[in-house]
Image 1 (cartoon, rainbow, N blue to C red):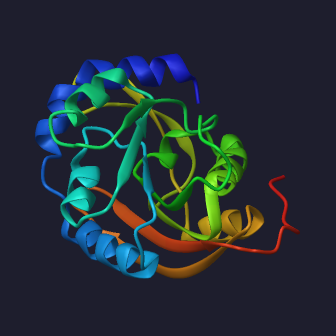
Image 2: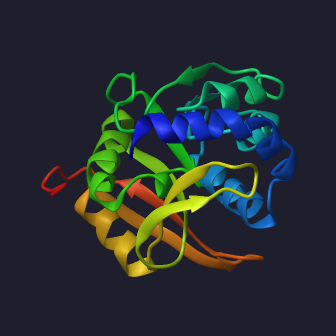
Length: 208
C-alpha cells in the first residue's frame, strides 16, 4: 500500500464516508455478537481500521473496552464523535502496541486496502499484538486481483485487493491462525467474506 495516497484519500472523503456508512450492516452485527461471545471476557479489543467509529461504538455499547486505530486523521476525527475509547493514528503494518496487548482484533473492510504482497506481513503484525489464543474477526471482499479504483464518496482513488475464501484461509493458516467460522454475504455491489480465527499457540508457521 502506498500510505500517503490512501491516507489523503480517506482524509478527503471522511465526512461523506461517515454519513453513507452510519448503519452497521446486519451481517456485522451477527458476526460482532459471535465475536464477543467467543471472546468470553473483559479483554481489550482493537478495531483495526476503525474508520468513522461505527463498529467501535457498537462494541462499546455492548460493554467492551475498545481501542481504535486508523491511518487517516480525518476518519479518526469522525470517530471521536461516536466513541469513548482511545483512538490512535497508525499504519496497520506497523502497530504501536506491545506484543500480546489485545484479546481480540476486529478488522472489518481494512486489510483489503493493502496490496496482496503486504498482507502476510500485516497478518504477522496482527498476530504479534494478540494474546494467547486471541481472536481475529476479518471482513474482506470476494473477488480477484487488486488495483486502484475511484471512490463513490469523492474524486479520489483507493486501493482494493479482493480474495477467494480459499486464499484467505491459506493466508490465515500461514500467519499462525486457525479459522473457527467463515461466511459469505452478498451485498448490493460486492460479496463479503467474514472469518473468525484464533491465534495458534504453535509458533511453527511462516509469513512468507
